Length: 387
Image (tube, rainbow, N blue to C red; front, top):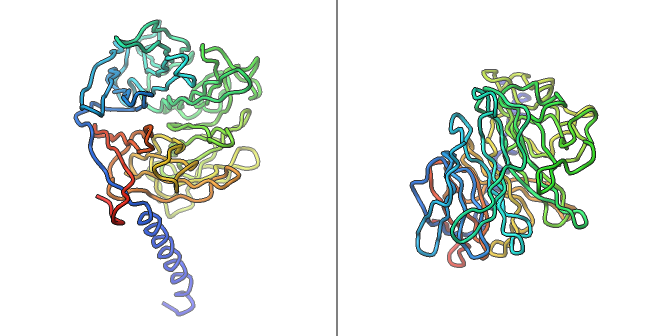
């Protein structure tokens, strides 16, 4: 190889080495200890922390569990017999009412059969009152109007924002592995919805042109994480790309994010080294560019939560993103204006498929693993090591 050809290679290797050193430095600065609180869970999907310290956890087989970390006890609160536990479907997300202390309700998403077409399935949003002896006033508040025979790409994550006295429930819906519905504004597949807490459209009409009234944004593949920045109240979401091209997006009502017409990812089976990005990759100006992307290899983002705790001050108001294929908890840094700037992997001692994360009242980070465990990460004030 000619010396002139070595210079670009050396520059690339130096850049990679610098990135690795920065990543190692960031991880070393966050000393922690990890403990396993629960094992033996069946296909867990979501976890929430109650004000009294207990956990609510969904299993995709339809079971809603209550876990007590103080004594290790677990209790079946309810089993959704309607659950379609196939493929990527099942009992999915759970979210506490945003004013839970006054209104102790919970919201859940369930993949169920269509009412009159049992071969087809879709996402159903439930609401219930949580009482000491279980769930009361359990009811469906929104049923996905368009269904499919596919059992993949359901999205199904929930977040809340408030404007004046009114709350908006944001619901992510994947395109059910059918791609083209993401650009069909008369179906909800591949969209993010804006609903009231009773399941009605939050706005008189959709901000997306010629769309169903509940549709807030379009052009999504499989958005499995959504949360609200603690300071700016801006909604952010993460979604799976195809082969590479996972995205972090700022959710702007009325916007289109391009799938399946454009993606920085490649069709399955394509050589990532080739120029295989779908539609050329670039989204703008017709579609919204992702704020952050994972290329050429997917990390498979499975949830997104902003850290609001005190135990890890270096993470406060930044986002934590779990991943499946990447087996990584990602720390996404946000600047003082609420914009993402960089990312790094956290807690190298935890390298497994991660499904969800939450934070308890002490600021400790909970991790829900795909193999059925609940881990708790605490700040370690001792030696600068992790275990």
